Length: 139
Image 1 (cartoon, rainbow, N blue to C red):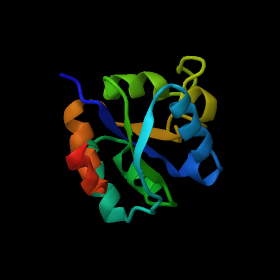
Image 2 (spheres, one colour; image 1 turned 135 degrees about the horizontal axis):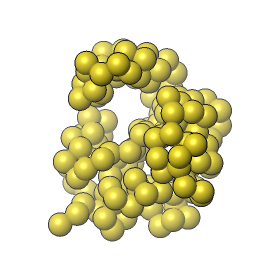
Image 3 (cartoon, rainbow, N blue to C red; image 1 turned 180 degrees about the vertical axis):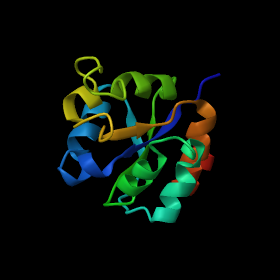
Image 4 (cartoon, rainbow, N blue to C red; image 1 turned 60 degrees about the vertical axis):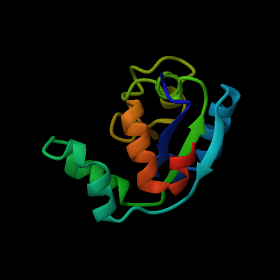
């Protein structure tokens, strides 16, 4: 059975350009319920740990630097089949390929500065949510 919550991060590009509220409102209009959120700046060590699954890939170093460069907004949202629903709502990694009306089509700058991270599986939603929020255990 699919989880009814998932994890996401409004990345530094979108947060620092004042798009966080618009992104959350966009998701709420699609039926997502915000359950937990915080604003923080990841240390390089935290970014390395969070994105460890990508270690060894060509973009890993750039991703770690970007995600630790400025504040971001980790959050948890709730909705039926949340992981799949959020992945659909945010769109393709490259905003040029994202469907109209998706978060990345509306708010992302580029493939590397794509406004938002979203868990790609129920298992990762649990792991990633717990990385930032103790509340993830009770959702």
